[in-house]
Amino acid sequence: LIGSTAAVIPRVIVEESLGDDYMGGLQANLRQWVLTIGVSGISTEENVGVARIRIKQRILKIAEEGFDDAAVKGTLNKLDMRFREQSSQGAPLGVKMFKDVLTTWTYDEDPRKALSYSKVFASLKAEIEENGQGVLLQMITR
Image (cartoon, rainbow, N blue to C red; front, side):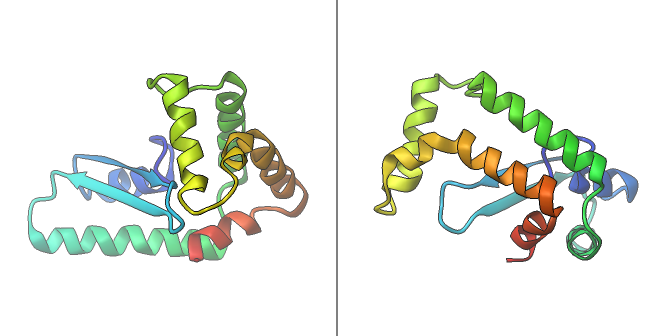
């Protein structure tokens, strides 16, 4: 939804001239995931409401119609490479792994579960390839 300039939310911001720039991300280390989005360059408080409505409308449209298949395939390939490279995205790999372990350990689950993310991703990727994007669309609408 927000991970690149080709993603849904950045596209709606640019296409509809809702602001100058954006930032955001997904906080997935809690049981309830949180997507944060910040848009700069919105001129009035009224336009903040307009931007919020337009972004929400686009997300709901995707929940109904689905993602572009090529975009899903490209994103899955990008994530697959990231997992294979063991990328820590700038942080030391040990720190990243410790943070991953805390996401399950905090909720009294097996801490090793968080270290098997490549297996979980492979399972998700296989499900999407076999059954389509239904699982992704369910994540959006929960």
